[in-house]
Length: 70
Image 1 (cartoon, helix red, strand yellow):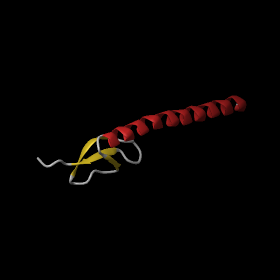
Image 2: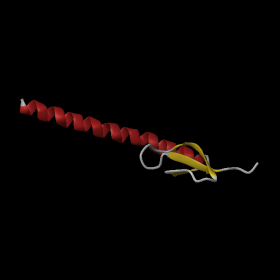
Image 3: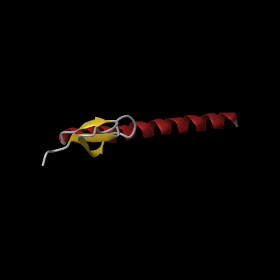
Image 4: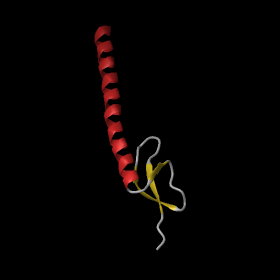
């Protein structure tokens, strides 16, 4: 019984690692899109900036860009 539990826990850990690896690809793509829109990835947008999208869910969730003068 303990051998089956070990195998199950190893497979579960491997699946969790794979999910994290493949979800990082989407974050890199969002960072590139933010740069194309002349934005920058930050934890919070400053008062003179506007949120134009998202970068990554963990460290830098917002894509910020300076507000344009109208």
